[in-house]
Every structure is written in structure tokens, then in C-alpha cells.
Figure 1: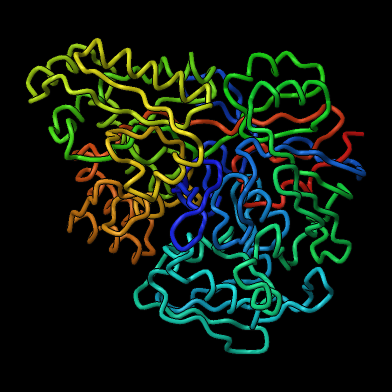
Figure 2 (figure 1 turned 180 degrees about the vertical axis):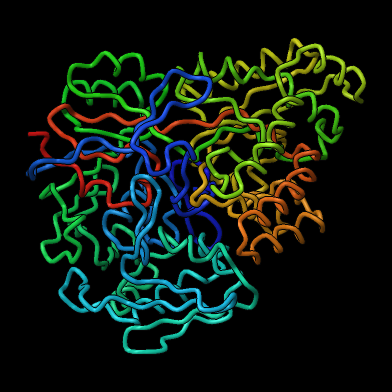
Length: 550
């Protein structure tokens, strides 16, 4: 699970903008289809626009979450960082717009529960014309396996990664791991040139150090505070993803009003992660089209500590029922979201086990439905003495401010006093991994996304003792054991059965209050087409597909 944050530095200098890892997940109803309709909303969800009919000279695209501070693939776990990396670099397997996958730099074969063999293509070159080798693949994976890297969790079960042939890399595992192969579709499976990365050292993936990859675009320039520019890689090996734009310029406008004006004026061609506050204006725009896509993104209130007023479990339970999720989805998010009642969004469920996940989810949806009377009763039965509950959120974000105010108002009706604490973007990002930045904070309003359609990824980042986002040092041996068993199983239904057992334990502890499952909202100029509109854009060379609408 990755956090929806503007990029910042985390432990050991790595990016701390995570909230789950590779982008392979899917809204089940959209798998293999171009459209579907989300439950509880009239929004039509689309995965792609029509294919482009011709090339274009220049594409200007905005990174709505702001400028990334690194584009080192192993640490590019933010919205902006991942978007840039996946247009410059190739992962071992490719995720399509409908979240299906195919071989990319390699074909993967699970020859046993503890051995995965990768057969590397022999026709791939880096931007400098040198051939991609098995040595580059093994180096990249071993580099990403470093525990200091954001994606290190993916390699937790790995015993060794070695070159075992001229075009072969073998991964041996200490224990069976069904998650690993899935994660090779995005940043954890991205391959970089060994020689370049070693020479760049700590500057690798920064504005000063650059990159050397094999993707459809080449990094041209990075002007800190202004833009990142890519140019088409004419040596690119994969005709299906040959870049339509000759040049792509990424801008960093994070103010939704300014971005809306720039998109409507045609100064910027498109953007992902459009703020809900911009939806009414952009729906009326004659310059382009606003679209809504299936996504693994979610919004939640995460308990930041259990030694304050929320130490009483009845208060945490009260929070589950006092928030009107339908109102949040319809009023604040303009219908570009649906209520969510568990830590996992339903889009993260694995296809083969959906019936099992659904049955367990329905129980929580019923128990956590909006019920002001029940919330008041729980508060009255608790030890609550009127102490203010501090809710922190990223300041400057109008949508988050509206959500926080609505929660504050509904809590007051239930007898709880909530103090809102807007934090500067950098401080809020640091608070994700630095407990000192959460001093005195009881709740964190977080937006996050899951990378793969696998519940283990999301829970692994929150509910294991050493998890990046385990704010409260949650440590339940049974949950830890079950998560390990799930990851070791290659049977999708067995994983689902084991998972709902773990879910029933950690959800009853109410360490977080899930609020919404949110859509991917994008805007594209009417003269262009080919855009991926599902959240799969985050793990694809999405800019390469955008071209002339004819």
C-alpha cells in the first residue's frame, strides 16, 4: 500500500510516499472489458480511450501530486515518481490497461514453489545502445531487495537472485512466495543498467544523477521546481508501445484551481488524479474530456496512536459508524468514489476468491453502516472524558480539508471533540514514517493505493510488526502467521479463506477507519486519444500511447 503524498525523503534517504507497490490491480467488473459501471454511483468507468491514429510532436502532462524527489525505480513509490519511471524504464512483465499481464523484458516460469526462472529477451537495448543482459536484471533485482528500498518488502522471502545462463536469471526463495511474480510488473521489477547505476551512486535517479533504462522514452532533462522532459527512444524494442509523442513535458502544478484553468485553456494536454473539486468545471470544458477509471485507491482515517483518547476500543468502534460514507462519496467526491468498509478496497480482491472476500466484506459493511445513535451509545459507554482527538491531514488540499471538516461535524454530534491539524505537505509526508512528526496526533487522514491485486501486499505494509505504515506498533502473532501462510500458498481460494481469518482479527481491533474507494479521474485534450484511464496507468508507459485523435 502506498500513500498518496507529494514525494519526500524517508528512511535512509528513500522516498516515503508509499501506500501498496506495483500497479496490477483491477476492479473485477472491468477485467478484460473497456467499461463498467461502479456500484452506488452513476459514473461510467473506462479503462482506455480510443487508440491514437498518429504521432504528435509534443505532449504536456501534469503530475498532480507535484514534483517527485527521486525517480530511482526502487524508491519511486509515489504517484508522480511511479508515473515518470514507468515511461522511462521497463519492468520484467507488462501490465495492460485492463490489468491483465504479458511477458515484457522476460518470460517468468515458476518451476517449483521455491524457484522462479526468468528467460531474458536478447533484443533489448538501453538508451545508449548497449545490450540489456542477465547481469543487469540480477543487479537491478538485488539492488531493489535492499531492505532500505521502499520495494524491499517484495523480496522478503527471497534467498538468492543469480545469473544462471547467458539469458537467464533464477530466483530462489526461502519459503514459497506467490506475491513475487506479480510484483515484477511495476517498480519492483524494473531493470536499470548496472554500469550506469554503479557509476551514479547515491545520485542515481535524481535530477543530478539521471537514469539509464530501456523504456520508450529517454530522460532529456529535469529542471527542479519546473519540469521533467522526456524524448522518444527511437531504438525502443517493443512496437506495441512505441512512443507516439516525440517529446513529453511533465509539469508539477499541484493547485487544483490553477490546474483546472491550465487544462481548460489547453496549456496542459492532460493529467491524472484530478481533484474532486475540479470535476464540475472540467465536466463542462469544451477543450477536453474528463474520465473516470477503475482504481485500487482508497481513503481512510488511520489511528496514529493508542495511548491517547483512542486507547478505548469503543471510541474506535464509534468512529466506524459515525462517518456517513455515502455523503463523502456523493458530496465531497462528486460521485467519483464509493463507500468502503474494510482496510482493503474491493478492487484488491483476487478474482478467483471474490465470493469468499465478498461474504466477509458484507458483514463489515452491515456492522459499519452509518448509525449516529450507535455512535453516541458507544461514546457514552466509553471512558471518553472530552479530550480533543487530533486529526491530521495534508494542508492545502481542499478535498481533504472538506473530508476532515465533515468527520469533525459528525463526531461532534456523537459527543466527540475533534481538533483538525492541517500539516504542510513535507511534514505530513515525513509523519508517515517518522513517529516524532505524529506527536500528539490521534488520527491521520490518508489516501493510498495498492499496486497488485493481492491483499497480502496491502496488509503487509500495515499489519506486520515491522511494516512501514504500522503507526501503532500493531503486533498480533496470529495475523502475522496467517499473512505468511497466505503468501506461501499458490491456491487463490485457500489464500482468500486464510485472508478473511486474518482480516476478522485486525479489523476487529479497529486500527483504521476505511472511508472510500476512489476512482482514477483523468482529463485529456479533445485533439488527443490513446490514454489509459484505469489506475493501470501507474505501471505502464502510459504517455507512449497518447497521440493524435485524427
